[in-house]
Amino acid sequence: MGIVISLIVTFWVGYLITRKYKPQPVLFMAGLILMFCGVALGLGTILPAKNSTGSVFFDAFEFIKQTFSSRAAGLGLNIMAVGGFARYMDHIGASRALVKLTIRPLLGLRAPYLVMAASWVVGMLLGLCINSASGLAMLLMVTLFPVLVSLGVSRLSATAVIATTLCLDWSPSDTGTILSAQTAGLDPVLYWTNYQIPIALTVMPVVAGFHYFTQKWMDKRDGHEVVPIVVDKTEADKDEKPVPMIYAILPTIPLALILIFSNLWISWIKMDIIKAMFIGVFIAMIFEYVRTRDGKKVLDGIQSFFDGLGMQMANVITLIVAGETFAKGLTTIGTIDAIIKGAQTSGFGAAGMILVMVGIIAGCSIVMGSGNAPFFAFASLTPTVATKMGVAPVLMLLPMHFAASIARAVSPITAVIVVSSSMGGVSPFDLVKRTAIPMAGAMLVNVIGTFVYFYR
Image (cartoon, rainbow, N blue to C red; front, side, top):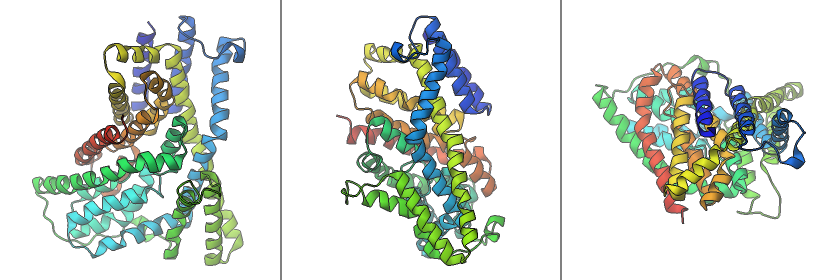
């Protein structure tokens, strides 16, 4: 009975989210329904007896309160600091300066599709400092898209490459990376260097090659002629306020601090993500004062940092807590135990369970148009599932996290696809036809690489 109820509720969640309902309240409601049903059917409890409020109804909200408290103080502050820093970098123009400096070496090449493939690799590297897929895509559509089209690449090909530049959320300061590392009980830097980098470095040449041959073949199939043309500047580019090119180093400062003051190099000085972001903002404020000589303007500008903090709390932290509430409901009603037992009795084993979880996350990402929503909903379940299957949680979290961001680039309703297609003047449905083959390659490498490098 519990399985039937959980399936009905899960399909209801997917239906509402695909209908553009706000995912947080949908997940909260679903979690509460599952919790109450689980208790009513005698399938589980919400809180241990020693932590209970004395009322099942109140226990559900006590769980939400405790989850908010723990997430906001630890993981939440990390994510908010990253979001605030990113917002401030956009405000002062440092992100755009970094993109312009990075793509400059490509301008000397005259092989259109080679430049296009190399641009994808550059975009992936930029993703280490610019964590927002849609934000990075907007910057590249303004700066790189005109370059690619002027070399003779079709608008669809250029847009497809840009829309998939952050198909792996692989920065140590990425929200999913932080959540994965914390859930796996690992330091984010060590999780990045030991687990994410090997997969990312394997994915890069594969996807770059897929883009080169796929876009070239599809352009030829569609009758596109590779003829250099002049592309007018977009309105965003015309309104751009120039900043010194030295500003390009500012978005890289926190990443440099996190890597330098870690177990990789200088381990006796303690550095974490929050301090690195605060230091990065402080240094950027000094740069801004030297450039503008206007103390009031510099201090007023810091409001964008605080706005970024609030946006992360409103959009990301609430989504994580909502996802954990939904996951708690699935646990309370007995669904997770049933899935694990079913996998064990059917002979799936740990490897089969990893494939099932990756498939669920990828499918949900495409349908929901979000990588974060499904991953955040299932991430907290992973330690329990992994322990019962006899593998380390990281072996499930790593491919699940990457599967979410890869599949996101194949959904016509996700933000990065909608933004890119709008700015490129192409259909989002035509665009995902161009991204599907490279992302299929990325997904295969993601799964196979996890088994080859880490599964023992």
